[in-house]
Image (cartoon, rainbow, N blue to C red; front, side, top):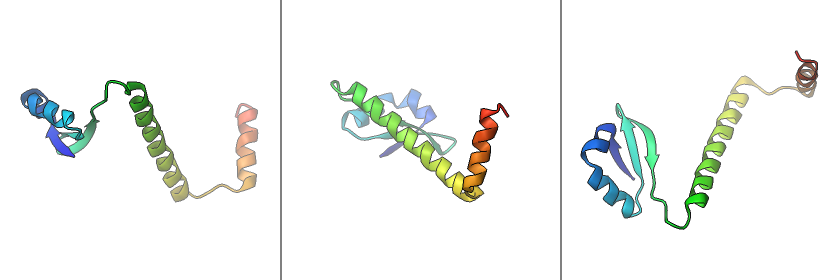
Length: 91
């Protein structure tokens, strides 16, 4: 995995394309923090690649929600039923 800054997007494009064409991933950093991931997409698998990325993002979101729920504490069955009843009643 190779790291490039946002500035490198403008100044080092040739090396970035060479890195991608060799099959490596590129992490774009902004102020030293990772903010984007670039991957190469084979000509015949665009749809599969996009679907895989979307699935990975969904799993990350689900895991984040699980961590937050575990930290906040779990609801009892009665509390769940109460929340459902409130939602059904428009509350």
